[in-house]
Image (cartoon, rainbow, N blue to C red; front, side, top):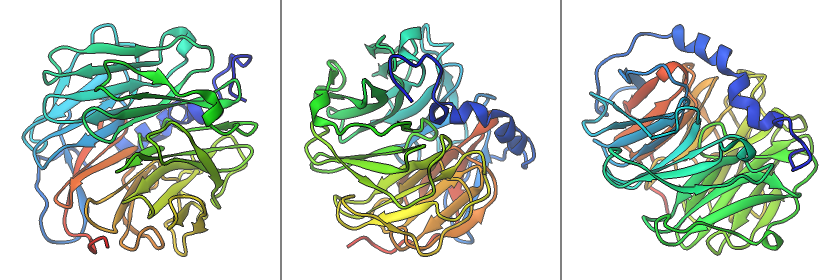
Length: 374
């Protein structure tokens, strides 16, 4: 389906746009924003914070208990340095028409954003700021027909990777080893051929994830099924494995991948047209993604973002169905609430944020079972 001969935007890449009305309605149905809150005892829940925008937020990156960044439609980039009591909106010159579907923050000063959109229309770009958003540098832009960035991730401040939907039958991976001063495309021969109709979902920033020592994974879906790609050499070469979650339509597959180390991980997703339906939506791997097993108990719905709470075996996932967690490496899940979000990020077990439609920003509070990772 994706490719230089196809001018229409493939359905998996349209997923967030098609959800706009539904997600916005859900956003308006929730309680108004409340002041910033820090994590504390009690049941797990999200406390909404005043973001100052109505943009659809698709990316979030937590740095510490005080610092977090978020990104979304209309060139929106948000930053807090006081735990979310206040969020400042930054202006990226010439980016008002861009949809920043993912953000990766290095610190309170340094962050990267990637825009999702057709490259031939000038919408596939990567920007960086080194001065807390006061100015931004365009680090990478591509006009190749079919290019469409889905997510960005970094192993550290210098080494990063971004993934695009297929061009000429293979996914496109670009990588940097110098903090984005140079981005180079990985030779296509090192990436397995994509299946017919296969694409990644630029839905919540976690269709791509990384782990130490050069490990990286990204999830896909579409009419041919769901798969997860894995690299063990910094994104230079890749393998791929089928994942037993519901797929087979342009709106279904793996939307989020989370790994706590080089071997233990989970893949989550569903069907974005059935936001609160479906239970075959999560799978786990204990061998770096070479094989996958369906989760034994899942939370019904569609999940667009998922992350591990650092240092633990606990995963938190969000989507239009609400939010859920697993304390056992993704094998079983328990609902937190039914407030819809698009993306989630945790800097520690005491510092987590989720973002969604209508400018929704919320900080996690309460206590989750977070067994220490072994």
